[in-house]
Image (cartoon, rainbow, N blue to C red; front, side, top):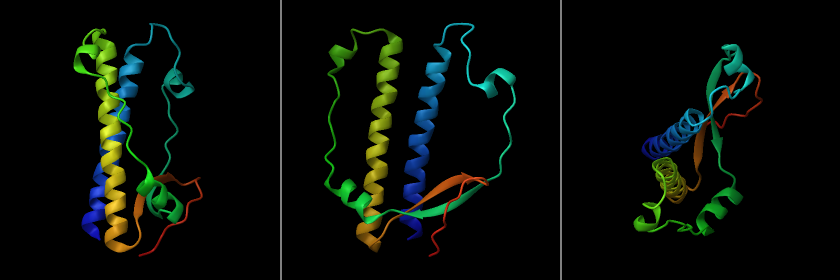
Length: 135
């Protein structure tokens, strides 16, 4: 079980890292003087204590993952090459996110098939009311 849980944790981290990269790309492309969030404007962010909780996937979620077919919305390289570097960069990171998301979903399915259930880990703050799944 530890191996499949670690695979899920790794795949999820990879997806989140790519999403952060894409957000940084969008932020870097904002025109000068564009306001961000209140925390960005003030330069302060309230420090919250976080903890990791385990969350079991519902049977409906597993069923959806197992019946879902991946969508191939990719474009040929010659079509993508016609666009600006910024558009190509955003496209590349979007494709990477989609691929990593598929890997994460497959890891969840593999854990379910191996163990009969699938568990994910989630970081929550103290003020969020989440239940932990004990194994």
